[in-house]
Amino acid sequence: MPLAARNALIALGITIALVSTVAYAINYLNQARITEISAIQDKISIEILSLDTQFSLLTAAPCDSTASSTTLTGELADLGTRLAYTENQLGSDNPQVLQLKNQYSLLEIRDYLITKQLAAACGAKPPVMVLYFYSNAGDCDDCDKAGYALSYLRDTYPKLRVYSFDYNLDLGALKTLIQVTKVQDSLPAFVINGKVFYGFTSLADLEKQFPKGALATSTAKL
Amino acid sequence: MGLETFAYPFLFVAIFVESFILVTLLSKPAREARARTLNTTIPTVAVIVPCWNEMTTLASTCESLLALEYPKEKLEIILVNDGSTDATSSVMQKFAHHPHVRIIHKENGGKHTALNAGIAATQAEIVGCLDADSFVEPDALREIVACFVDANVAAATAAMSVHRPNNILQYMQNAEYTFGISLRHSLSSLNGLYVTPGPFSFYRRSIVNELGGFRYGHQTEDMEMALRIQQAGYKIENAPRARVYTKAPDTLFKLIKQRTRWTSGFLRNILGEYRGLIGSYKHGTLGMLVLPSALLSIGSGIMLFSIVLFKIVQHASAAIEIRAGIPLSYAILPHGSFDWFYFPASVYLLLAFTTMLASFTLITIGKNISKTPGNLPFSIASYALLYAFIAPLWLIRATSDVARGKRRGWRY
Image 1 (cartoon, rainbow over the protein chains, first blue to last red):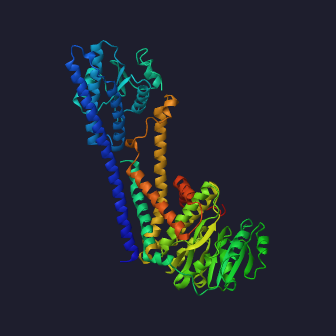
Image 2 (tube, each protein chain N blue to C red; image 1 turned 90 degrees about the vertical axis):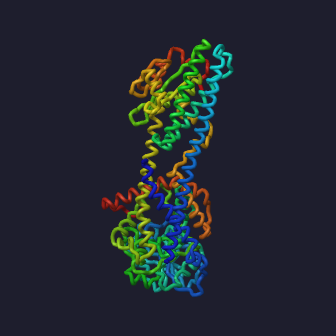
Image 3 (tube, helix red, strand yellow; image 1 turned 90 degrees about the horizontal axis):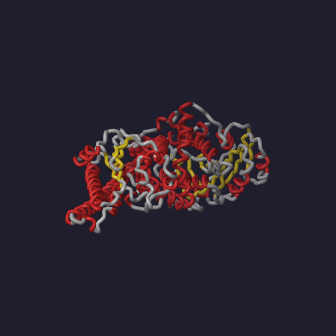
């Protein structure tokens, strides 16, 4: 075999090995991301179940419970950010991503309900809660902007609870939530303390939809 | 399917070519070339310096030639004044008293005519060219001459690097030239060279005459001659320790002008008279691998640049759009601490990184083979930062010129 042909074959082998290693490394990294998200979800799931159980055990005096869903909400927000990044990397039609999004949405709904129940049972003023419905099926031009504006509000006002839902997700509990809140297929949509708003024009306009004083908390701006 | 998917075949080919160069560097012919000893027989040599308005650098070029470690009775230095309109002629006269320096004045006709005038004026066995903006190490000629032991060798090239790089652009070119040392050394061991650069390439005079001397060659007479040599079935060798330093363009405008000339010259030669070499099994590595890869590299350079540019603009415009109306104190600052989770790795980026890493390896090997002095880390850093964004500019310009039949002037 001529030297050039032999060298070309060796080079081809090296190239295939390098490209395969790169593809394997990226796949490994993506799987590690999914594993981490799963682990976080499992942890939150257990904590929510624990909170739920405590709430049931102390039906007579639920406010005596030292449990709080505040830290869980923070963890949920972090989980949401990671999930959004993974979805961006792997694609929104990836089966593992869809499975994680279903679980994440269930956790959000559960946290939302418990927060409401705790506030009602304790007679305390409930935190401002935003249900945000988006779509990444290419039919919502303003969803990215709305999502970023809500991230800003959530980071600036830590007591604000933002729950994001993919409107098109095939999940029974989510469909029921959409039915209950009467959100139409006109996205982005926001449910702020039970009132529904559609569309996003600017941060200032979004802020106007919040109850008076809801964003003027004692928490200092970052 | 993302836009970057189109880049995968090009990145695959780039890694393949770099692997091929590395494997060939380790092969026996390249190892033997590196172990080549200096000749005991000393042929007669003429070094031709074609000059057109070279008053600023010519004296240094001549000084470096006069310092060559070569028997003076076997060495001619032929300064050809190709109709200069500046003080080149008077600079030449300062060297007229050296017995082995000859000066030729002629009407301006282009570099190829100056070279032919020099060749016509000598009977030396080996003739070479040194551009008047280049300088050689004293032992360079002995290294080059050793390549001509094989009677089938028609030409030999040197190891080029940038003379005293002074800005980031010149450091970038220095890394590129040093990469070229590895590339030329590797490909020459398989007779795959298609250019004999102006700075210190040498030719067997009898073969040059047999082939009809230098031609205009679409402003790349060195490439045209190399292609003609290959077409005729002769060999082009490389002397990796024959160090030559050349002045590199110091501004982006000059660099793009110079490289547009080189690239359009390559395209015009290879798609014109020498089209038959592409894919030619008879011409081995040159026909089957080197020329197709060189052509593909022009297309891939433009394509990869376009993809990267499109992605940058797309991301930047999306980032600006979603941040509209958000306080700057939040919008421009990164949030959170470093987390491996968000490490922006993708197949595309890692393959691009692999290609870059292989390039850095070849640059380092080039420096070590040739024992070229200089600040390599800064050159590599400049190369990594700039080359991928600058090279496509001349590739696009040259391709556009060839497609439109546009011809530009020589001087940058």
